[in-house]
Image (cartoon, rainbow, N blue to C red; front, side, top):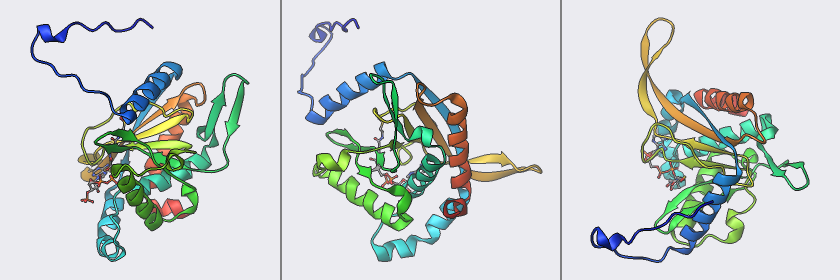
Amino acid sequence: IPAIKLPDFSQFGAVERQPMSRIHKITAANMSANWLNIPHVTQFDEADITELEAFRKQQKKVAELRNVKLTPLPFILKACAYALAQYPQFNVSLDMDKEELIQKSYIHIGFAVDTPDGLVVPVIRDVDQKGIWQLAEECMALAKKAKDKKLLPSDMQGGCFTISSLGSVGGTAFTPIVNAPEVAILGVSKAAMKPVYDGEGFVPRLMLPLSLSYDHRAVNGADGARFTSLLSELLGDIRNLVL
Ligand code: CAO
């Protein structure tokens, strides 16, 4: 690929040079490799999380007693674990040299954490086997470890799928880059109240935007749409998660 030539910026005004952090260098190399190697498609959808939010708010007292912050993230992790079990074609890695698919029978999910030094992705193991409180505790502990720069390499290994939640920041949708050798990543944007037609009239519903990017070598478009439809169904009525 032709390199980008830099002009002498000082001819336009004052500038300052700073070395990139170690995390920034690793992220930049990985992002370029993933962007260039993977034919990406992003599937957009929305989940009606009005009831989920009401339930989450009801649990505030219990959360305080347990000393846990209960955000939408553990519910999204659980829904993704369910969808990965339902659609195992998302829980693979491609070995292009051997022309083989590596199917995983475990469900470990990473979540992107924004730190002053850059982006890191700690991984929660066996998400399918854990309850919402345990997932909330693990999210909090790993996010703290990430922000304190205490993550071990083993905390960031073994992921099958990644969630990048920008919901606390804002935005309506984005196109996340697949975190290879995984084949899909879910971007979550900020939930917003929207008028939704219920067949008789418009009712205010809290809608959560979902952006699923996937490797089109591993996953076809219909499965991409099935995966986000299932997520939307699960988050729309979390009783489905216990079925
Ligand atoms: N819509 C609306 N509100 C949301 C939301 C969403 N999708 N997701 C979270 N929120 C709310 C939370 O409920 C919380 O509000 P309350 O205190 O009222 O409950 C508030 O936003 C802050 O949440 P949080 O950020 O503390 O917790 P989280 O579980 O949502 O996220 C973590 C944790 C570690 C993912 C987050 O801190 C972080 O680092 N996010 C950035 C990830 C990132 O940079 N991704 C980009 C990667 S691609 O380049």
